[in-house]
Image 1 (cartoon, rainbow, N blue to C red):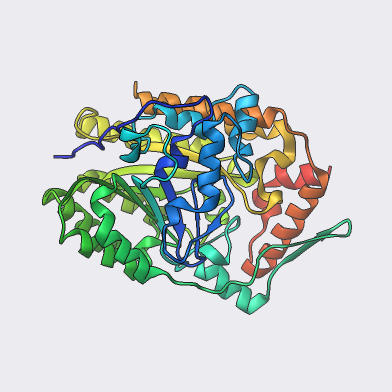
Image 2: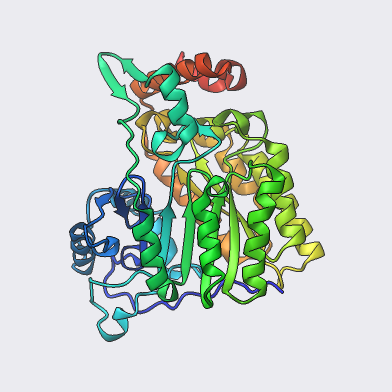
Length: 430
């Protein structure tokens, strides 16, 4: 029997600008030796004592929020959306049932800034079988191999050069991470594992084996996977996760499939993706296990056109789940979406508000909510992003850089973005 993820214990917010992620969540990039409080903000160096959750930068940001001052270094992402009247990540996590539970220190002191994480996100390695066009060496060994063969891409337009990558040197803190996990797993409520591709990484097997030796009845673990690893190998990891659920070693397990749209467009953007294999793997999960499923979307100009097709595919999966397993007993597939970042020319805002008419608004309308509060709030969050895009203006220089970048990738990979995305090509050259 599937056990739904536990609703987070949320302590009273002490200021108008407080963000639960700042207090409860940490992302750890073991290959880079850095940490962050969410995907929107700058990374901090992990201290020598490995207290990644209480870096000087995080402590300062928490105090600023208590003082009703917006921190900088990435928090502008939410500020811009809120100023436009939309729902930001910060606002979404104020009431979201899967929001991270508050650190125990807040029980005694609601204004504490030096606290323990209850939600941890780990990037163990860059070992990955895909080379998504918005990704890079830090997160993909396939990208790393491609750059070794062809060299880094320099995008130059109007005298401005944009070097796509920094030199990549793996800085592995795996042993320190597992030491921390052995000592602190019981204090966590949520654990996320990302990549690279976790189902290609031995660290994931090591983590699953560690969890089999402990009982953490309040812990939910989620793997973010491109679900394009061979089915037999994927099943081995899924069966291990299923056994942890059956044996009550953990409260719940989830696999979130990373995919941005549907059709040939999806396989272009996530180069190396096999859609038939993706669907076979995700259907195995919700048809044969008690593992929850989700979809994580990276929105960029090229994913806009068939984003509605992905929403319809999600509706199809959810129809099967509700009909065959029952909505009350089994959590249906939830979507999450973030805008492509890292390189400024892959951000959807480079085309201004017209990009919303290329499929984004249609995608929101096509996504069925199944009377689920989470999906209803997710759609409101998507509309908030649209409001921020409505205030953007087209940037021809970034569009030209985008064209140069895609043209170089096409030379390397034998692809042709002009044929697959003629609207983008024509808009750049208009």
